[in-house]
Image (cartoon, rainbow, N blue to C red):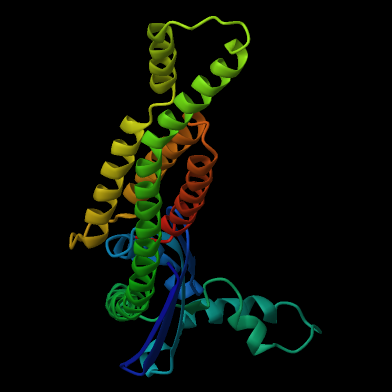
Length: 288
């Protein structure tokens, strides 16, 4: 599901900012956009995120600026002096450029207590991530409630159409028997031959067996019951993949109903049911 969250904090003269965005995805894909000084935390930030979110394309962007005195790089005076001494050997050369000297290897060194600074940065970033994820999940939950309402409407539509199919199914056999008797009577009226009622019953029974959709109706109804239970569930486990799999099973039964029954009315209802199931499958991709 889609969502957005952001957080900012100032700690010891350092300013930290983090935002997180999520888009629909069947699986979890994490994209981290971190400045150089935060890249060492990439694996830990992703691991912490995966503890909280299970689906979606999630993008984390972070930045920091440290204006405190402790952030200043230290000048390695011995290295700098050695560079200057070597440059003095070149008489008549250009004047010494201090900025160029500072860029030479070993002259500027990271501030002391690098490990302590990293731990402080890590603590700040984890705090920001937790806060931003809380905002994102709140937004996703609101979207989730709307999705659940939409899924329930599709469930009700399918259940209503399934009632019409189950009511129509017995009538299909009766209509076939009437048409068969009428056709036979018309063909044999002038011949004066009567067909054996046993043969007629056997033919009707064979037709009824070929077009029997009772099992498919019952299985689809059971799938709908399970679907409703999942939507009403208060469990914290992700439901999206389960709903998607259940929708596939529902579609399988609807396809069988459509293929087994030659009745136009049942075929129309089966097409409507399949359309609603396809919309469920699309929405299930967004449910975590």
